[in-house]
Amino acid sequence: MFARTQLNYRAVPLPDRTELTDAQILAAAEAFHDTMRRRHTVRNYSNRPVPRPVIETCLRTAGTAPSGANHQPWHFVAVANPALKARIRQEAEEEERRFYAGGAGDEWIKALEPIGTNAVKEHLTDAPWLIVVFAQRWGQFDDGTRYKNYYVPESVNIATGFLLAALHHAGLCELTHTPNPMRFLNNALGRPASEKPTMIIAVGHPAANATVPEVAKIKKPLSEIATFAE
Ligand code: IYR
Image (cartoon, rainbow, N blue to C red):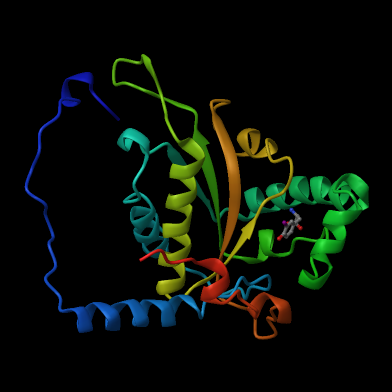
């Protein structure tokens, strides 16, 4: 992606400036909160397809995220191929069976009880798209030499957050799934060992009978998640 010659510092005037009043800013903040508070992690998908351009655009949004030294140390694999989804499901469920059979430890299993999860992962075959997020520990210059990436988890997680917001904003549902371990995804998707899979995001439309766990809607109040020092 980078040519060494392009890596000199040059400033350009801030593009895309907005000049809103405080009232407009508050209204915009409230509207976005109202959108995001209607995001629910969904485990049951219908067979309604999602056109590829939607996924492409949401991935472009993810790609606008800030990153350490602007290295953009992420790669997303969008899987719609049914055979590949079936393989991912089979391998993920193998890991999950070990996890739920004791690998996770009692405390973790207890913590998941109110969420209602188990080793069966229908979403991996039912959702029209699985987006697998990979974190790149290093990158390559155009000439093939390597460069190190910085703040890789932070950068990739910000991009993943942008992606989830973009998908939700577009009217889709999604599920963040983290089979543990998930190295099998490198083989299944042909990604190099320098990349670490961090998450599978199932994307689609909710099934008619989709449910969410009641506890998932209990969010901590602002007073608990934030402190102000003015
Ligand atoms: N990876 C497992 C377990 C799991 C863990 C947490 I923490 C969750 O919030 C949900 C599930 C699974 O996907 O079932």
